[in-house]
Length: 513
Ligand code: NG6
Ligand code: CA
Image (cartoon, rainbow, N blue to C red; front, side, top):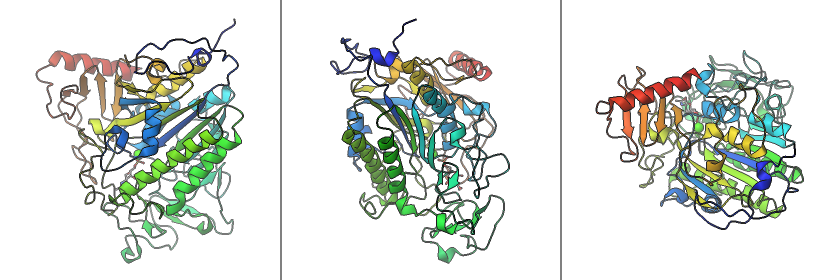
């Protein structure tokens, strides 16, 4: 059978703006056009209110605004989860993270939590002939069960789940070990100074925040009082690997450089680059050229640093003439948090800035600000700029890109929860998906369908222990009409028992798979 993958049939130049407006199909002789490159750039803990293109007025993000202005800017897009590890797991596997046990916030020595037998989004791209790379924050574990050994080739790594190249931060920047891993090897490690990592007890004799608080340059507000690295006390203990330690101020430059190198190295073939920034997660440590520039403290400064990163990637594409045929997705992994464990004055210096916009909760929460994220898709050769109000979830990116490439997702165990939402993803249609399911820190699930959001009853704590964030857990069912009550102020479950019943049944169906 002669078939044309969808990407070859898409119209070229934009004619009519606006999501859902049918675009005129132009006769394009582009069967010979190369498959589009895909860059998936996922920021950390960035709020939908943190960007000027989403209405922020106290901070300006010109590069991300430009990306949004040239692409489809979603206003009702969700991460699957309100923390990093499960959110990223869902994106790359197309399976809801709550179906698997070890998908909570991973420690720095966690095993690789994606089964090497799993066919990931990166595997799909590799099968389709793409060069695939993972750069920056990883946070899905590395190595076998029982604790990663950082002193030898770390296996399995991202290269066992579909990536040809990796240059990654194993977990988060507040967790040890504070080193980069490139293709299974700790970068710059001196074999005579091996790394030991432990998440249960102290190892070695490096000072800790608990024992030597006078040695820290950034004081913790919650937790974060184990081994001090570069003057910053972290989660977990480490010793050794001195020559391999990253410099926090340089992380954005290092990973942006690696991402640019990857693009340059693969400019002549289709590539898939998955890039996770450490910004704007704690500890928020801007390079000196951004320090003090936002007037909002370091949380604002690292938003500027993130915007710079996005600009650098865009400039690289422009300089190689690749921007037109590159699908550039930008989003966050979960909602924002102000004080997430260091005394960085994020709250005191907010100056009226609203990372959560009008939404309730934030990172960790089942409420809207936990999972409602900025989400932008730019592809000049294939889509028209527009604002997209359709309901969309990150879980559907995998199957949508598979549809674009006409790549079969078989057997049914491949990306089992991901649905083809390509026309919504590309802004061709504004119907959106039937429902989205989200998860909070405690695996309490909620489901949105149409204007309704249902949060299942939970006996878990109402408030997160450290951040005092409202988790959205309530022993009673919660129902909000988010079209008229986006701030989830009025639980109307008692007044709409039939809607509660319908949504709880739908959620049970989704759980049953
Ligand atoms: C929490 C940390 C928080 C952050 C989070 C993971 C404490 C008190 N808090 O346990 O600082 O690291 O885990 O964030 O330790 S995430 O965005 O990577 O999921
Ligand atoms: Ca995060």
